[in-house]
Amino acid sequence: MKEQLGLYVHIPFCERKCKYCDFLSGPSSVQNKKAYIDALKKEIEQWKGYDEKYEVVSIFFGGGTPSSIDAEDLAAVLDKLCEVFKIEDCDRIEITTEANPGTLTKEKLEVYKKGGFNRLSLGLQSTHNEELKMLGRIHTYEEFLENYKMAKEAGFTNINIDLMSALPNQTKEGYRQTLERVLALKPSHISAYSLIIEEGTPFYEVYGEDKELEHTLPDEETDREMYHMTKQLLKEAGYDRYEISNYALDGKECIHNKLYWTGKAYLGFGVGASSYIEGVRYRNEEDLSEYMNYINKKKDIKRDVTKLSQNEKMEEFMFLGLRLIQGVSKQAFETQFGVSVEEVYKDVLKKHEQEGLLINGKERIYLTEPGLDVSSYVMSDFLLE
Image (tube, rainbow, N blue to C red; front, side, top):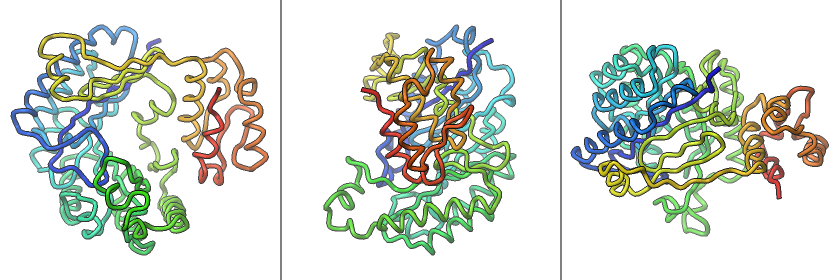
């Protein structure tokens, strides 16, 4: 039986970089975008033969903003993936592209749908225009609504909406309104995250540690209240929380992201893209011009290669798996590592059970509601020396 495999394509272009973004992305010319698409297709060719051992179950185009390039080019990359990995029926697997409101048109959406994409992930973040402007988003809430309507009319029934809380000067009432407005649209999936101020972003220069405007960020108590509000309102609306920050209607969980959280293999294509296959982690060259040079000279891309130790694999199994509400399978741990999870983590499991943060069941280990609230604290104890 073939192993499951996810494919990720990185599109490093966007109309304008958001102020909180630390992803490998930025604006570029049409010429550079076309050249990059050609390079992507050449890189994909290098992986011929992997279909013999692996079965592709999901494809995800992320960025950057995939919808900032020509829809036909995006569809051409998808065609190349289907050719190389011998995917004959696109409808049987999940194929997602991220898209930002303000970059979509009726024609683009029709090309996506005809080309085989069957899931959209829309970066909304907020329904308040003043918050969108502050974040550096290129769209308004009204433009998002127009794009969402067009996506539905184009035949997309599986749509994720990204939301963000704990924004500068954001109030609980304002965030509640954002949640209620989005729930009224009944998307199939919602991802809801708190803003994290990352070094190297414009936001860090303004709101980072000890900066003058740091006080405009909601305090920790308000952040927690927004987090609990998200859980409550989405549960009441029929959304199942299956991962710390992800909620879905029945049968609409994101297959691609679950591959990451359950330690399955994935291949990443494009500048800076990461892969994890056969216990080895790869990361492509992060400099765009260097990436293009390797491809155009028909050389193997320069990649950072990390072969994980047994301890590192066990750590990741627990870190990623405990993000899921269902937690980790004890049998899967033992099958993969040849040792029971209790033998490796006996003291850690006992400690967090006594604290009421974790349940060590007969078949699975998972975090309690209080444990999910302090997941970083719990997971840090699963580091092995």
